[in-house]
Amino acid sequence: MKYAIKVEVLDVKAKTFAFSSQKTMYGGKKVAKGDTIFVFASENEGGVGLIARGVIVAAEPVARKLGVVRQTPRVSVVIKRTGVAKQALGRNNLKLFSDWDDGRPETELNFKFYRQATNKIVGISDEAAAYLDAFF
Image (tube, rainbow, N blue to C red):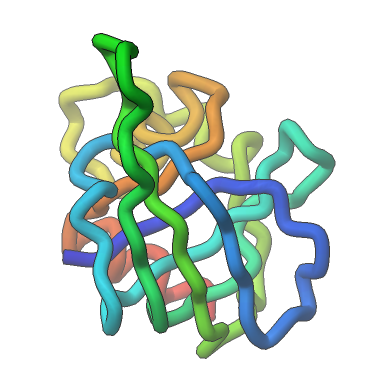
């Protein structure tokens, strides 16, 4: 499976990204060393959307807190950048794709990232990964 992460990125030109205790949804908790991941700099924190493609070099689940019944699984990841996006892709590009049942990769990304504004790691389909690959 391939993944995407929407997160605050402090240095968009970094060769390696480290993100601690990231929320996971849509299969994101299964992210593991060697997996491909697409990095979106969160617009909520002043980012521009898709900035990089990378490979997971470390992934570690974060222990759940005792006494808290409902918890979203969290994972800490280290990503080695393997590509820089050559074209913009963010909320403004994807918000037009809101027919949740149309099967388009743009709609999948809009649904998983922007229907809820929270930053997160998500699993993505092969079609969405191929769509994102075209930006590199």
